[in-house]
Length: 429
Image (tube, rainbow, N blue to C red):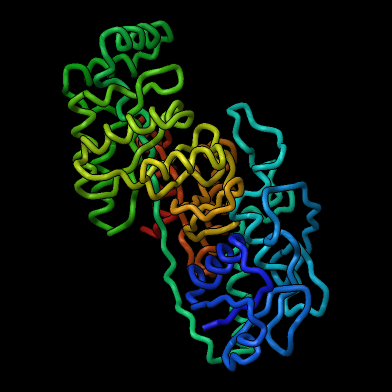
């Protein structure tokens, strides 16, 4: 056990110490504010404060974990061994920076509470982040810091117990258009056919007619192929289906359509299924509750997973709405238009609500790659970026997650490229 002394045990301190020491490193910890108890302890111990109490492991604190709310911070990024760090400390500290304050800054998404320029969809863009501006977005720095911190601790306390974890990979398949042609209704289908004819897209006209008379599968219905991959290679996939009402933003087919429900039920037999939140579900609990109930009716079990990477990730409102409806896992934490680790970590973590200064029960599963970036960079650079991030995650035995769309694997996409990326992530020959 690691005994931690701090003059005041704040919610922020409990949150970030538990994440780094317990969740990443598997080190049991205990907090104390009693100097006598700390000095009497003859095992591994760490003090977090203004000055050391004796010869214990000492990290000098910055003020961030003692504060409430948020304010503008001056941050200077500097090198540390083969990585970077910020919130630098004087030599009296056993670490050259406040690892806990820096980790809290990234995990809580502190910078997203501050004024920033939004993108065209109202989202916090990668370019506004400290990680992008200082060129460490591709690194899960929180996990890297944690493992280097562990090594330094073990030099001081070789008998300290910790647990190893295993490197994992997983992908999320978004389905906001389960079908391209099938079950769209007469008016939508007629308009779509007219546009294909007008643009002389004869291939699509033929495909559309063949799907209508049921001699060909819908091009977006690639779920059986992905399920076969799961069966053959024992890989982890999470499928997200959109069940929102039709609108200018959400254009999937009706949740009442039998083929739509049949696809979801068949996928749920072999993989986890979650809710791909529609635009209005991001805005209000009522819409979110309606979509959640629709999915639960189809899969006959509670919905535990949700995400929405296409629209604005509103912190903390979206997460509070998910928690209110007892959705316990969110997969929205990432940049859909840029590879990298938005929260600086490749480890699932509990979301901290800065407005309320509480650790919420909602577990965040960050992703590092979204298929939206394909086409914005060369194939060679794309595969190099994925290889580099995979290596970074392997070194800290984390979880690498990527997001694809069912449309990526259809005949109307460069499906060979997407399948190659999928196999690269899972290391499938």
